[in-house]
Amino acid sequence: MHAIRIVPVFLGAAAWLPAAAQADVTADDVVTNMLAPARAFGFEVTAEPVRDGDTVRIDSMVMTYALPLDLGEARLTTNGMTLTEQGDGSVALRYADAMEMQVAFSTPEEGEVFSATVVYEGFDTPTIATGTPGQVVYEGAFDGARFSLSDFSVEDEDEEFDIAVSGSVSGTSRYEITEGDIVTVALSTTSDSMQFDTSFSDATGAGSEGRQTMTGGTSELELAIPAGQVDLLNLDDALRAGLKMVAKTGGMQVEGTTVTTAEEVEMRQTTSYMMESNDLTLGADGVSLAGAYTDFAFELQMPSELPFPISGQIARSEGHLNFPLTETDGAVPVALRMTLEDLTMAEEIWALFDPETQLPRDPMTLVVDMSGDAALTREPLDIMRMMEVGPDEETLGRFESVTLNDFQLNAVGAQVTGEGAFEIDNEDRETFPGMPAPSGSIDLQVTGANGLLDTLVAMGLLPEEQAMGTRMMMGMFGTPGEGEDVINSTIEVTEDGQVLANGQRIR
Image (cartoon, rainbow, N blue to C red; front, side):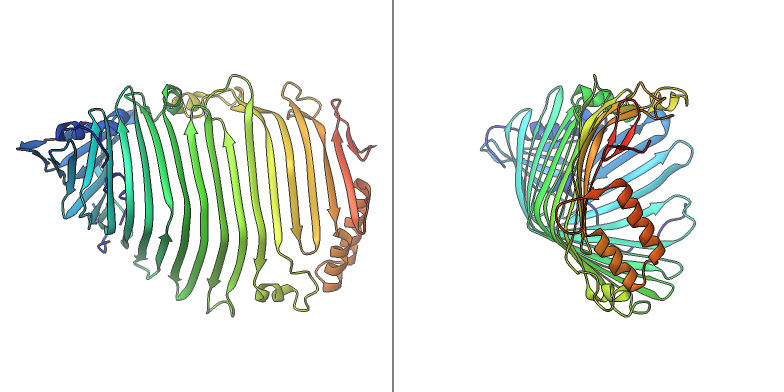
């Protein structure tokens, strides 16, 4: 095995971060409760609790997960903890001064092929567990706690490289574990500050160093695990059995810097933004992703290659996506939305192609908002079944309708807006050979296009003949609208396959 040299330093600590409430539990109740999520997911847990009076000590704990198809196993090992009954119905959890967590993967043929060890320090405040047997709440705080990656190795890695990751975190956490046929975990954290430092280098001298800091913010996680029913090769069944995850993060200021060096060329990247929200929902109804960020700023410097930095800002960006993950009984709603508001670039970038400031420098905006109805006719997360699907079998799913709720593009003095809707006939693949037949219409409006063409020609960026061809195309598909330099266009597709532009047939 070719081990990789490592600089002591990170990795995530969420599951073991200190996290008290009220009622009557024993140390043994807490041990059983803490391990319930892992056991529900399918981990085999090996631990030997030793009781000494009102204290239960666990010197080490090993969680092993057998990978599907006899591919091997994943193993998580920690150096344990002590659990002390407080005499008031609560239990105090204390961790080792340097708590170690090792993650390893092994295969039957090669043995251990990957391992990494993370060391957690500074979690001095005990976690207090309260509640009742089968339903326990854990609360705590951590101030300047540290974590670092202390060992990292990969089997048969040809090239040697150094990697270092470390960080610190301050905040509070609360989580509740409820046992049952479906084990649930509800976690909430409040972060005062968090910092991650990373570095990487290889034998050629190339490498990178980075630091990311996060200030403020809250996180919530809800997890439901159907005990003994999670099969990685068929997560569709697990979702129908109750597997679910809801994760929400927001109110966090993020700043980061990365310096990369390769072949004596240095590149420095800096970013900053406010994460207003970042949400994920995953369950039998499908997956939903949503995020909103404000005051995003970026800068890229390459002193040896560029005489000035490349920089810009985005006042606000939003995104939303939802779609099904299991076979549906007919069509269900789907949606996609993306927004970039007030994108601006540094004047040095504009000056590269417009030194005389002929193009407007107004902030640019892009909005795409689409929805529709779609059906899944297969189980996409049933891996073995998907591997058996032949090339001539029915596709994974179908769209039955698509709606463009809003489209906006504002840039360099021009604007394009649009909206429309189409029905999709999946049984008709003859009207438009090889694809389902759409029917419906879309309305478009273009403002400032002729003025933009004139400017591009005057700047020498667009030949006159190409501008003329573009004007002819706009005249073919559009009609003059109200106001100066406004073109309207309605594109319609009829049920019999005709394509009309403003009522004139073009197909």
